[in-house]
Image 1 (tube, rainbow, N blue to C red):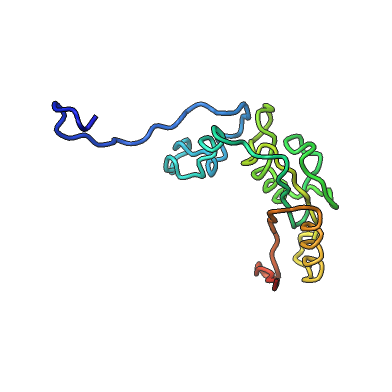
Image 2: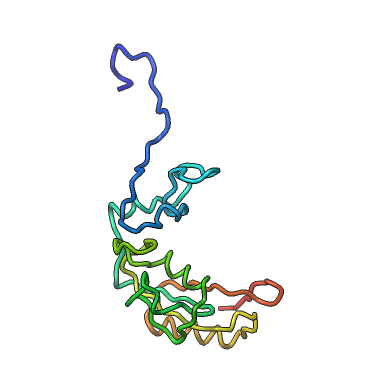
Amino acid sequence: MNNASEVLFAEQNGLRFPQSNPTNDPLLTDQWALWNFGQHDGLTSDADIDAPEAWSIETGSSSLKIGLIGTGVKLDHPDLQGRVSGDWNQTSAHETAVAGVIGAIANNSIGIAGVNWHSQMISKWVGNGQYDYNDQLVHDKVIALVNEGAKIINASYGGLNGSLIEMEA
């Protein structure tokens, strides 16, 4: 309305974001990296990946396979039922949380919502959490994930003393 003759000057005074949960997943408001409207002290509104805005356009695809390399996903987690396959079913809180952010089932009134509401994930185990991974094992798991159709691979593991393991292509 800056072009109306009665208006000398107009500027935007902030943005408004939805305050209601766009899903029925009760913990979505705790996923401030996906949806941040300043709901917690110290958070800057809209410092997020704009997940609700993206979900209004697209909620993902079940044809996208995402590989997870680490210490194992809890395959029977209620927010991941039917989404994760793999060669290790271990209760790794970190790896299970990563799988949740990637593809937790949305609108099931449980926990959180994943970025891709329909993705399929393949979990590959490379160690017991004691940083005893070896390059050959990691290499073999990457190749297996690619052969199983993974288009994206997330590797959540470290090396000795917290250093990252590097792998040459």
